[in-house]
Length: 149
Image 1 (cartoon, rainbow, N blue to C red):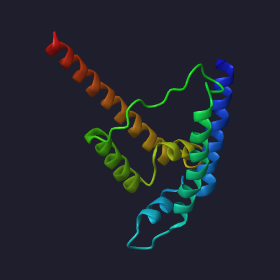
Image 2: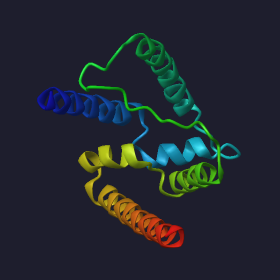
Image 3: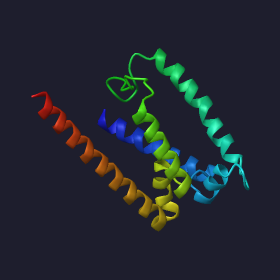
């Protein structure tokens, strides 16, 4: 099972990264041009994003018909569908970061093969941000446990 998961993960990541590179989603200049709707707008990435919706919609329909996934003992799907301040705040941070850097996590990792130095700076900053978030989250949980006790 582990070998199957690792192989599928590697294959999926390779196809995803190649798709990002070929489509232009890993090109920060192109992404910024896509986000510049009042300037020299490059609408082509809208087709890339729209083109991802159909296969994903089909995957969700197919997933509902399966009893269990191909390479895991069970599905691990989000349990909540709430739109709250944390979700909106995260989406805003993601969008601002995407607009400023022209990269988001997936394309940044794919860019490690294309533009190693700029991508590495982004990936390191992203990892630091993830680490800081985990520290803050664990401190909050520890504080909540003390208050409950």
